[in-house]
Image (cartoon, rainbow, N blue to C red; front, side):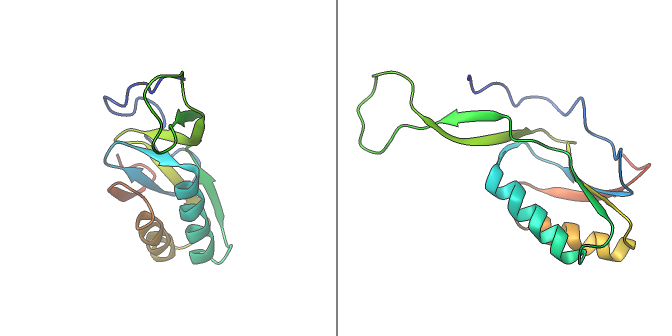
Length: 126
């Protein structure tokens, strides 16, 4: 798989569609499966399993990496990990069924696990 383009802003998945509150990306990055899982666990614990949570991103792009101290050439390397391509305005997580202060704190804790700046948004706000 080619590395693809991370340019531009999100054309899809940039509004709160399922829940009442969302976490929106403000920068572009590759988010690994470990980062997504760490944020999911943090949100789940902060909500104390009340309400409902949606994960709006999926790691569907693979990237490869050659081992250390290997010479150039000899073909493409093995798959290292899977990543989700994040563009500015992408909604990463959504939640519903909890009060706004709980949702805001859960998203703040999850944002600390992520490699880019984010913001808390509510349904109806861009």
